Image (cartoon, rainbow, N blue to C red):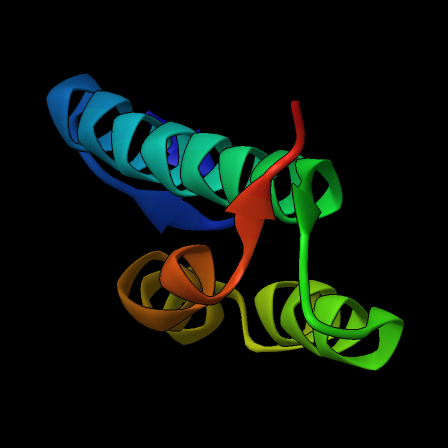
Length: 75
C-alpha cells in the first residue's frame, strides 16, 4: 500500500498507526491528569501542561516520572 508516496505492507502501517495511537492516548491522559491535579502553584501546573504539549513524548515521560508525584489529586 502507498500512502503519501511511501510503499509498505499493510502490517507495517498497522504497527505505525498502533504506536501513534498509544502515543496520543498517553499524551491525552497526561494532559487530563495534569488538569485534574493540584500543584503548588498555577505556574507549575501550566509548566507541566506546556511541557507535555510542546515536547510530546519526552514531556509525557517526564510528567509520569516526576510531575505526577509533585501534584496531589483533588478530592
